[in-house]
Length: 401
Image 1 (spheres, rainbow, N blue to C red):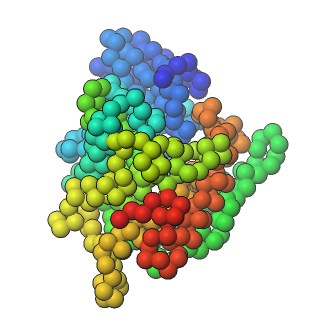
Image 2: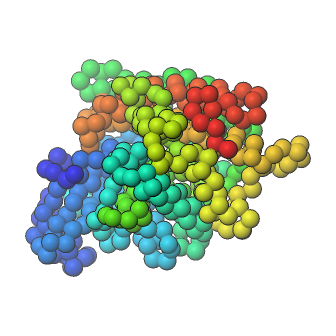
Image 3: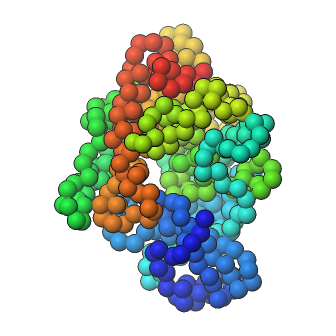
């Protein structure tokens, strides 16, 4: 999992800085780079005592987007949640914002000795354990969404309203910048995503968006960003918080459900394709309906908390609309936007690869997935727009309620 350092770090400079800030991490330090992670280079530190830690840093060079690679935000939310909540996170030790130390900002957190399942199907476990693993992931997500930002000192971590409207504007600008990046060898631009303007028009229309809500969100909540206990089906830590903010909770829930929607895509042309998520393909996997039911039961819609889970808008209520139907349509909108966002992230990886800033050998594969994912997002958009009671997406993916 951790091997040779592909992006060298001045180990002596790191040791000197750490000695002044966290003396319990004793030099000499051994450093190995993890193979996973497309965005922020991640390293395993082994101290002289044998204790292990993890270092996360920004990638070197000029960054395409100032909204990505925010290791400072990662550190802040991990430190806040670790102080006084039941949300499992690594221990945050220190943050360095001085580029002069190792070239970019970085932070150090505890190493969690557990299991990371890169395949969300969770192979090689019994069906009951697979179901329990997914169940705890859902419960942990709901617990995160119950945390009041103000209660952990994160009142200013993001704006409490207008999340999806801002996301549309932000990702529109990011995609424009990424599309213009030229390959350092061929000079060819990365290019814009298919149906980009049409999707921005749909997503930007607030009449179609889910009812506005705000809570702490992870930003990339999925099975392989969780560390599970070595023998128990229990989450011991959530990783990769660089996209965290105060935002709409359905953004996290839809991200967790992504494998159910992408299961029918061609794995040769896209990422996040797991045929084990096809209906009845894998024993023990909960259905999307079971996941959403468990999630909402833990959040508890009837309780006033950081998250307002009113499941129908005032307009729908006035028209006599049903809560289940409204929930289904909101989730389908969120899922369509989530697939678009995934295509935009892949476009960003393509842009970093074009500039030879990518931090993984998988970067080319991820970059080439941007167009198929964007086309799939457009199919989901068209399904949401159909006057079919919010159930149109079930023909290509899953109905959610």
